[in-house]
Length: 411
Image (cartoon, rainbow, N blue to C red; front, side):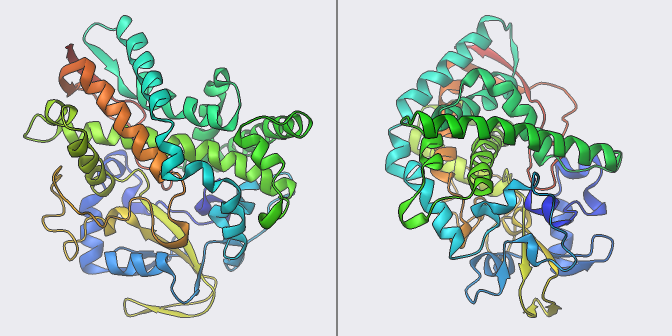
């Protein structure tokens, strides 16, 4: 589950429950930055933080007063032994264990290691698009054709599991990160998440045991045999690591790609043509997408002692949601923050977080997005989003759309 879901935090405030509100929450962010930059929501029993400097301070955690572990939330109830595996991942651990867990796999996500994957990622992106275009006339769904399958195949290859299992990976991932909407039966929602988590856990338990018996050159073997400075992982930590890599390794990139298409489509310049011909400019534009429509809009933290923030006192054990999407449009940090400026550079956005918990997979997500958009613009011209009613992903922290049909002309 997400940090919010496991910790009992309901990240969705009432103002964002409606479909249109979560598609474009930015007016509400602006109102909150101005009127209540640090505010307590009694309905959710959660503090919300909206301004850039405050969000960055919480994420930087310079004095160690904010924890990532929901176990520190007042009233937290430990899930059963066979549930809540993500509790024991680096995502929800504090130093020093966070650093020890991260060290198990971080070499595979270093920029140099990621760059070596580019030829394979480019081949995959081209094959996916060519297959989709063979069955398309002048319209295709960017999510189904490219943005979803590409990162799933890449992380599956890195883990060492069959890419043919990607459909069930998507089903598990979507269910686990989905937020409970106002029209969702709570009991059904919780049971679906529990079932998906248990199915994924059983899958990885089998694969990890296979790697202990038959080691290979893949991340599953690295996790299954982790020793040395990191210490051998517990079974829950190993399972949590596999699940986290699978979920985070595909969902963020999927929505980075689709959010980029939304940003490019709404601009007065023909960015699809312009950026497709300039790799450096495309990289800069992707950073602006991460600021303007970040795939991750919120993160959670917990004070371990009373903290003064924005004129308010947060007590130890309070739930805190820091809104990256609001911080990334703070006019005190970014000139003309609501404009998508593909030339904005440098950008000190918080799209991948900040501090010790800065996204491990950021280099991979950036590369996958750049290659996907490059291959897309290499094959298509006159790209525009089809006239359709977009449906937001119902997650408590992930921001994107379920599908994104585009119309185009082949190059």
